[in-house]
Amino acid sequence: MKMNKKRIYIILIVCLVLLLGTATNFSLKLFRSNTNKQFEQGYLYIPTGSNLDDVVAIIKAQQILNNTESFKWVASKMNFKNIKPGKYKITKGLSNIELVRLLRSGKQEPIKLTFQNIRLKTDFAGYIGKNFEIDSLAFLNMLDSIDLVRQFGFDEETIFCMFIPNTYELYWNTSKEKFFERMQKEYIKFWNTERLAQAKAIGLSPVQVSILASIVDQEALLNREMFKIAGVYMNRLNRGIKLEADPTVIFANGDFTVKRVLYKLLQKDSPYNTYKYIGLPPGPICMPSVAAIDAVLHFEKHNYIYFCAKEDFSGLHNFASNVTEHQMNARKFQQALNNRGIKK
Image 1: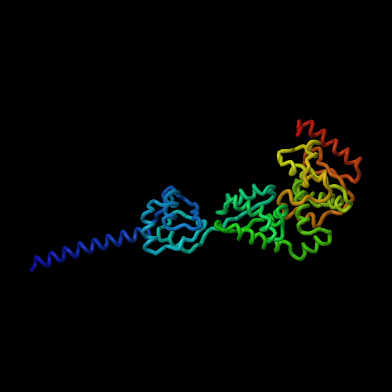
Image 2: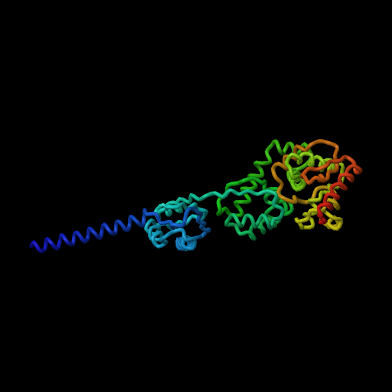
């Protein structure tokens, strides 16, 4: 009888030890830090349409966790099936249960997107593809889609006017359609009653303001000179004089390394060549800054119809109201280019 009791006690003790071991193991899997010792902080990107196995594979590839199998075990026990795509901030010391809760919550880190002075659609598409889940080629196709851009009130030449340069917070898995919708909302917000009234007062539409602002942006190195440069171009537009803006010639030729606009470049037959065609080009030559747009809306009123970069390479310009004075300014700058050996 005593022997049986002894056996029972032994069995109970063994069971208790096993239970404690199981509980300890269970607790460690749940609550112990599982991030790699070399891992300080980073981001986990989960693509749209991912399942748990995909998430585990990504975590393993990035070497975020010490033990991916324990994470998978905890995730399955917590019935983690609804995978929410996005960019998640992973900090040092995260346990499996904390990671599952983070991913389950969908509380991802927003991306702060800043853009300005982007010249080409291909460059913009590449930039978007680099920062978001959006495929760059698919995004480029949207920019070139006549039917789609018309839905937003633009055409394939003027669509860049919709993207107002600023810093925006968006999620990594934002779709290309949602991105366009967000940018249209920002455009409408930007062109408030005051700006619309000012554009009407100077005789331009918002799109025309943006097109002219893109030229001003490429001409002015310093923001404070934008108002005066905008005034020159408004004088030319109002008098029916060709804009003859060098940045439009450079854009038309597609060579952005040009420092000196030579005669052969001026011969390029393009609607963007304002030496050949009167009025504004059909679209912006870059995404104009807010400063340039507002400079056009509040352009400086003066009698200048010419300007030329100063020969001291300060980034400022010499302005002139007649061709004789302008030619003198131009010769000084051309001589300065020659002195520096700048031939093209």
